[in-house]
Length: 622
Image 1 (cartoon, rainbow, N blue to C red):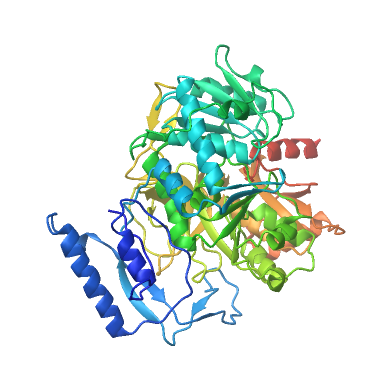
Image 2 (cartoon, rainbow, N blue to C red):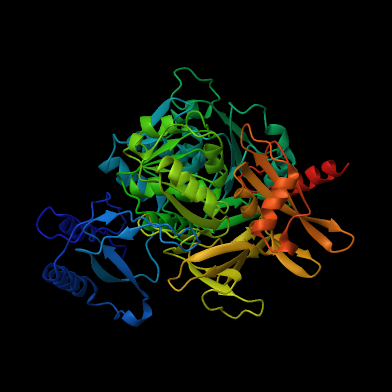
């Protein structure tokens, strides 16, 4: 049975008594984040004794629980936290420290969670407990919706699907920009047990056509605000439903939200089981066509649960995101966690450097989602803003691509805003993450709640701390299979998925990405990680963004080439950039050339577009 966790205080009305009451429920309710508190040894013993008695009462008829099956971790319950002044800048430096005075270490069983609550139950709970609380603030739409309104709309949408003969287990596709309406379709379909396929409207049209062909949806839902009508991209015979604003006073009769007004508002009978399919998401396609991956409802829940636990997210949080909701990353860092916890989601359609800090201030954001490209942009054109100007902000995240140590340090020095790094992928969710008060410089953190991470050599042997190998992951949040069509599922190994990242771990279990296995440049038989060259170029004071690529060479077979976008007003010569690399890298890793570009090309998910880089190189050679 899922547990409801509170602080270690006893007494009527206390968080502990609230938690005990919550244990009588079959669903998980994440509590609001509480301030760190002290606890005496006697009080701790009393709480443990009371909890043991509770378990004996509730689980007495069940089989015994073997404590040996659980892996203990250390939970710090600090009296206070403080930043300590470190001068060392090497990867692995501890960025935060917990004040020792008054802190208590408590052993906790944490092999992984077994919690699951279906989306219907979650939304029904929110409608009862926080009906009038704002769930989504849609910045570009200048619109907001409460949990109560959102539950009612998604309930009607689930019933509308049934009236259109879209049943549990069927598939729908969704084409829209970030907005309240898109998330109504997203969550409403999940409530009905219908598989959702959100499509990134910024990818190439040929890829949209490929996705629609492979998914073969029972229906397609699309926003009238898209710059062009997408209906020609799909197969004939599939019904398409257009929608405008959910709260528009006058809408066309065929508009989806006009039709929802006449849909049944009866409770949704479906209760998706943990093993039912939930989502088909597509990878970003850095070098080839995107691949679809499919999850169960349990896996999607677990993918959201891991960052909630690691980042200490709760009802009191307000999370800002601006990445397209079709990415798996926002689905599991903002869209899903806000629904699981009852937090507020502040949603923009694109990142805006001019408006970013205003968003943080005006919406009292506590957690700002970030990616290295955004961090580099904020550093390239710094503004006079510090953490003191944003009192609600706890931290900014960085994920989707590696963040260099130099940019991390420069950002925190410039703005005073802590960066918390995580790492994951479409197939895996967040594999590793730092905790807000326990970060290490250059590390993606420790394995998350529902993941096991191993570092293996090419022969499949696990490597000791300090040695580089390939990351191999497993856990209940893994995607089940690659989707190649209704009858073409390619299983993803659940006992060891190789995601292509090269990494090492330290003695405390923190993981450090060292490169991508397929991004290795082989120069004369010697392996060079393109990430190492990228990070070297980013250390140059005139460089705002960088990338590296292996290109063909008649002598060595392949040589590295660097690409840089410069800070405004800077114009270093190529010789200066190469000299910088010679001072930082061993000779055989120094790029054969460095090409200056207006922007380093990225795909729709913010990852390096290697096909575009190769085209830039071909153009530069002419």
